[in-house]
Image (cartoon, rainbow over all chains, first blue to last red):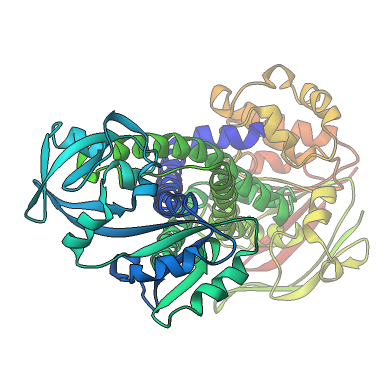
Length: 358
Length: 211
């Protein structure tokens, strides 16, 4: 362990470059994964708190475009085993000077989910605003949504960034703005199997599609797009990290040709030489991992507090993500150093005799 | 251990460097390979020490062909030490750590260093000691596993006369080891038991010191 540390210290400049390259790559993986899982997590949490089944328009790719008829509400609520039903409209609209804000039209019973920090629940032509957007709009008494003015009846606080940076209003008001009955219905069940209920609800109309919440989240197209994009960017960051290590380590090996030639001349095995270089890369990756996790926390904190993002970007580094990225960092170090290490293990000791000319 | 080379030929590209050399190295003696630059002495030394594979011919260690040795690294580590013209000590390691680089057993390093007169320099780095002390450390690195052979390429090339003589005095003191030294340092020839004179890739003559 001491020998690799000494070697790294001796070649401190290139060690520093490898460290920076790895830190940037690992941070990129951390950030993109944390932000994408944060976005998905926020939306999932919002949906999961409200029920076991989600009903949307059939075949729709995004809940923003979903339009379902509320006339189905009484039929669904009368099905045996249905405990509660909340209809919602999800939309986005300019609010005052902000170009886009999430708007939630909710039925009266769902309104109770919002914990007020000031004011009262909204009546017609009134809105509740999230704490974050309330501050951004400088504590307004009234706000303009899609050319209509609404009185701010109260302010709520939510851990979910989409809501904290959004506006909540009655379903009827939202219906007028977005010209639809509802985007979705969220249904909570008594102690019965959700799958059976899904079938019963789907039999009620050909225009709707009911799914269990977990099934909906697993198959929601937007989540898939976010997750796939995140995975691709992470893979590219991983690849860039590996390429960075390969190029820097190759330079290191070139600088240290004599050293590896001597090792070969004293009979050290290829495995021993390869192990030494991989150990050096792993040591750098450990330090880079620590730096990356610290850097990612700082960047996420900064992003969360950038007003123009309205709290919609809310990354979270979970223990699972931290472990996964740790494993990825080690793999990056091993793969990145393997080729240069193999090259080092093949350096011909004859080059020492020939004065480095071979 | 006996060392024998038969019909050694070697090419660098199209240029033939060695032209069918046959020789036998006497065990526990100092053999000097001498000759002008370009005579092939360094190439021959590298082939005898297993650092270089000859284009044609065979090297036998105790009648075992080098080609039949499965793990040449392990064989070299156990049986062969090499001293380069430039000491090639690793800068970020102390002298002791340099000597321990390929050592099977690190316990005898202190004694070896004492015997070579560098015991007090164990924790020094190569840039903190003199040229002669560096070369002694390089010799210690070659001797650490008590190999049958030590090959040295111009080991005194960068040393003054006093230090150069010191190196050969050291070689002399290790009676059980066979030393094969490529050199054109005429002062050193006096210390050799056998002298192989090379010219244009062939052995011109082999002379033995009378006892």
